[in-house]
Length: 280
Ligand SMILES: [Zn+2]
Image (cartoon, rainbow, N blue to C red; front, side, top):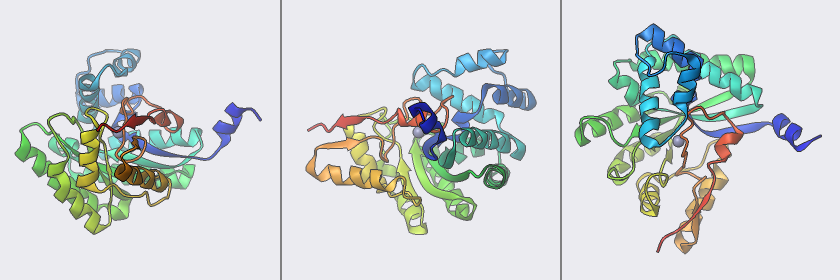
């Protein structure tokens, strides 16, 4: 068996995706038509080209536009089940998938609506594809409207995440711009999540230096994956700090330079793995 065949056939776990960022150009094209959202390109190929990440600002523009296209439970089910289908095609049996409730809540989509779509897709994926999906609900570091709005939506996200644990939510995440938006103010939300049994999977270190990673470690106490896939990574990272040697940014806190926009599930996310030296 060739290495390529072996890698394709091996059962895999996907540990870092953002659901909204996995939406395919054709799906976004159709969802935009349904919801009346204007896209900057008028063909599916053009949308695919527009998806190509240039920098974080562009990435967030794409991400927010995709979010604006998602209005109904069917919309959320569509992109989540398409993701599951791609996972199955690559023989990924388990995935931890990020989702940002605040962006949809701010767009006027109720939690009942998006949770219904996510749950339908999750059940279908398990039943028909043999793919298990666990959700990581991300807190956004910077919501429009300033700090008070950001904190209000962080509170909202924690509440929805805790209420949805029986629907597959396993962790709280922290995403968005890092410079000027340190993780420390979010510590109480992670504390509340941990008290309820949620894990902590914050992003840090992709847009700011090691101080951001240290802050995220202190603020959220990143924890192990309940499936064990993330446990060794997280523990390795946590242990590395006291001796000051290095931190693996593949561990939580996570890096996703491409932020999964058009990133295929599974192996590609591992390309985000890299080691960074700790600054004095
Ligand atoms: Zn990410």
